[in-house]
Every structure is written in C-alpha cells, then in structure tokens.
Image 1 (cartoon, helix red, strand yellow):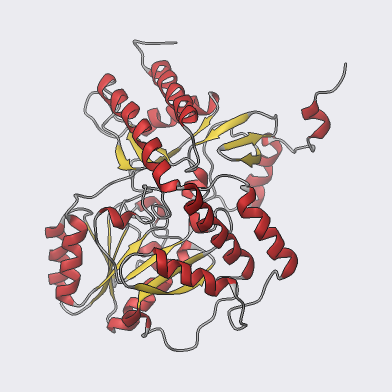
Image 2 (spheres, helix red, strand yellow):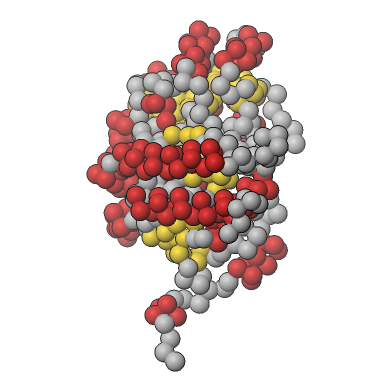
Length: 426
C-alpha cells in the first residue's frame, strides 16, 4: 500500500503521551494545559492549527489574543526572516532603524497625546515599566488595581493582578490595593483612604482573563476625572484588548478615554516577543535617567511588529473583527436564550465570552465549561476559558477569520451544547 502524502512529507513527532511525561519531570508544576487528552500542535496557517496526526483545528483563542493577523502569515514572517538574515540582534544602546520606525508608528496609532515608547520583551515587563514610570513621575508609592484583573507574572504585576489563581506572591506588597471593577464609588473610597499616596490606577478597558468583562460605558470616564482631581496617573493595560481585537486599534477608544500611560504586547508582534509602554510627553520626561533593554525593540521583533501593523491596515482587520464579532454574538445570544445553563454573552468585536452557569442557582459552573471546551476540541475547535470561576468559554480567533469559518464555529458550539444538555442528547 502506498503511503499518504501526509506520511511522506510529515516529520516524525514525539506524540502527546511522551511529551506529557517530559513535561511532568522537566517543567515547573505550575505550567498547565487545556484538555484531558491534549493534541500535540505542530503547525499553523491562517486560522488553522494542525496536530501530530494531521488533524486540523479552527483556532478560536489565538494563543490568547496574540495571532490577530493569523498563524505563519507570509506578509509578516517574510520581512522578519529577511531581517534575521541581515541583522538579528543589537541592544538599545546601538542605533538601529526598526525600533524608531515602530515608535513613530505607535505614536500615530495610539489615542490622544501618547507619543513616547519604551520597548521590552514581555507584557509583564511592560506592566512593571508603566507602574515604575507612574511612581517616578508622581513621587508616590501606591497602585490601585481591580478585582479579576490580570497584569502579569513578575512580582509587582502579580500584586496588581486581582485574580487569586494568578497571585502567587506569598508576601503581598503593601502599597498595592484593589477596587471593584466598574464601581466608581468603591474606587473613590480607596483613593480617599490613601490621600496623596496613589501614583496610578491600572485598568484593563475590557477585562480579559477576568471573564471578558466590559465595564459600564461611563466608568472609564469617571476614573479619568478621579485621576485628574487627585494627580493620579491613569494606566491602561491593552495587552489582550489591543490591536483591533475589539474592532478598534485599542479598546479604550470605544469609551473615548485617553490614559497617561498605555502598555501593549501580544498581538503587536503576532507571535514575536515584543512589548512596550507609551506615555504622554509630560509623563515620559520623568523617565530621564539612563535606561536600556537587551531584547526590547530588537531589529527582528520590531520588524515583525511593523509588518503586523501594515497587515492590519491593508486588510482592515478592525472592520472584520466587528462584522465577524456581530455574526458570532448573535448566535451566542441565541444559545443563552435557549439553554438555562448558558448566561448572556459579553464582549466587543472578536473578544467574546460565554458564561457557563448552574441551572439551579446561576452560579459559575467550571466543570460544565471544561466539558464544553473538550466537546469543541473533539469537533475541531480550540477555544479558551476565563473568569474568576473559570467558567467563561472564551472566543478570540485570529481577526482574519471569515464568515464560513464563524459558521463552522457556531455549528460546533451548538452541537456541543446539545451533546451536554441532558434533555437533548446527540
């Protein structure tokens, strides 16, 4: 019997069972994965991922809102490969062009007076840098974050995080406080309890890992006013919500509010590790002692980011996020109306969450959410889960996803829901 083309052309893959054994002995025990029987992902193209057996999956999580322009996009990887062949690395202490072109580009794209950038390699670094800039500018120590927020894995960022599962510091920092997201009176209480101490309020315009939570429309404007009244820096974390994920370059644009400092990562590099924080001219002037970053804004990642931004603009990914998000949202609304264990979906653009709840008391149901995640995987769809109760089925596909692919996703969700609804087995 002749071998299939897949068998002829595919490399030999280790397989999930052996990889899980390596993981168990070689990685820290905190590193986890989705699925009881996880597939070994070996390649990606556009909106699709392929496992070691050759099975394809529709990627509806984008590596957690990273691959907004799609996997292995030639328009991004080709100029980046050319850069690797030409100049792979220097640090910021040498003069190169890509980092400066990227800084110029971000100054044009970001709202209001945000105009000066500092680049680093990860979102956690950007969080730390933004908070350090705020404390330096104000000469105050305090930070206020929000419940259910996620800001990173480094110590200060971890302390600003409001999700218990991501707060791994055994000795919490005393100058970091938490308020309730979306409730301005609660935030005012915190500010008034610490007069002259708060350097910054750090907020995700739309909470990602907290369960795709959109605040009341007026909330961010109220926070802006509060900051102005007390000389507090307003910092926006746009790591998950930035770069057309919600249909706008940045989620804060939906609310018409401009921060003093914004930081970004994830989709900026479309898979290449780059992050940065951007500040207004006045605030940036406080970052005036010598500073450098070994990998921040290196020629390769800066080139990838520039190519990514070019692709977003030339293909109008923001408009597609709105159109395909509306298509998916209509279906999710319908499921919430039909099934008593599904709550009202939330989000903007292609940043959508579907809460899975107990039918009897409407409490979070993470077990059923996991079952739905598994059922989708078995139907060739990879989604995410978020929320303080880990019960929000989350959809953040590449922004290049098309109408037939969203229809495929909707059909898979419906079949999976019916499978898990006792009165409607399939």
